[in-house]
Image (tube, rainbow, N blue to C red; front, side):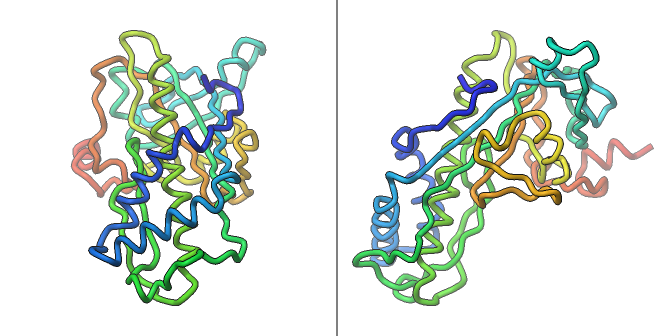
Length: 276
């Protein structure tokens, strides 16, 4: 569905899933009237901008070749067919060593972005200040199922609620889009294969510098994403990821590997690997 084609995902197709993420993340720690006010204000904020919400994605399928236990070479599938000497892009992460024996049959490299939720100074009609609700800022870790371990804490300054709603809705729509993307991709792979957990720069021991490598395999601009020379992405609600195509039954990396930053002292797998 998405392969090599820029796609705009209609907001209404993600609305239910995004609201579920929003409620779970933003409502954490709130009870009673505070939770009710927070959620109703969030819906008003979203509804005031719903026609402008723009969700964009692009995905490229890549052939793969294992170079070493912890690195793999990726090559855009179309480039492989059209060039006599196609260039490979190298991705490195300790977690790849766990796929050495089973092998990698290919990879989907993708970019996603969400925009149009900016407040532009417009206040929420009938809303209350943060001080009335005990709310603040959010931090969220995203996985294949969306936002997890999110919480409300911190600031109580009046007026900051609009910024908070903006950030939380962006995260929620992004999480919903990631879940939708994997579901669609999983439906198109051959029998006998499955998709790996969502991997990418910044987790599973993969350096943030690998964003630049991903940008050589899929066109970030087609998904409304800009990558700076330093490897940061715009807009703020942007995501990049990789799904490796693996034989069904391939080992799944331990959840602890997800937050790995590449320190060989960080977990049992790396300690065992480096024992000798």
